Amino acid sequence: MAAITRLVKRTSSLPCAARRFLSQAPPHKERNVQWVFLGCPGVGKGTYASRLCNLLGVPHIATGDLVRSELASNGPLSSQLSEIVNQGKLVSDEIIISLLSKRLADGEAKGETGFILDGFPRTIKQAEILEGVTDIDLVVNLKIQEEALLAKCLGRRICNQCGGNFNVASISIKGENGRSGMVMAPLLPPAHCMSKLITRSDDTEAVVKERLRIYSEKSQPVEEFYRSRGKLLEFNLPGGIPESWPKLLQALNLYDYEEKQSVAA
Ligand code: ADP
Image (tube, rainbow, N blue to C red; front, side, top):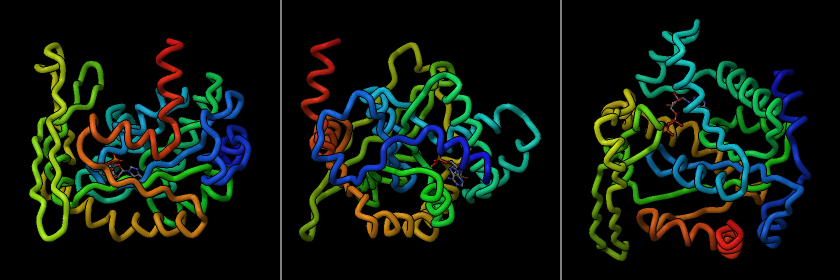
């Protein structure tokens, strides 16, 4: 644990509560954000976190990506990780913290500051460790209608060349009994990625259901952890990227910031 304490402390920025951050847009140039994205498998954490990272100039650190690249490296942890991930279970805190520490150290060596964490913390224990070593400014809790989650995971495709994330699922949920409907168009890849699409080995129906079960058991309590600290921003995705992205920027008070960035570009 000393490693993450040392590393995260060195990359920490000024402490600031979510409310304070939200009243200050655009963000200070000299202070990079330290945010966390929470949400069920398939909700779109990676998609929105990586877009925000591009906008804010901070690294997108997804512990799922760290696990998958460790798996692909065929290193000493590979076979153990493959078994855990393909059963939809959580990797031990010890392994996750060691992968995250290494990622932060590599980033620090390249001069990175700030981050958006995606997929971490996923247990109360991980949240406590993180709280012990750095200040998180804001935790965004993404939500979507439950029926969409399985379909989104099963429709997920990744280009094995450029690493782009796409989705072939076309989702249409009827509004009924006071609940609003939702339409989500597929997010199709460009023609040159089409023949290189792969599906994650843990995106099968049985494994996704197990990941959703584990999320509600182990990760949902993390929402309350941050809610009770006044850091949680709940965001219900109204549909696909075209409907959701502008609304998310508004909720984060970053709408004008994006416009200024694109004018300056
Ligand atoms: P998703 O959010 O779609 O379930 P991720 O890509 O975030 O998928 O994670 C893939 C897998 O990596 C998880 O099912 C789990 O086995 C492992 N993993 C990722 N982050 C963590 C974490 N913080 N703690 C434990 N295991 C993790």
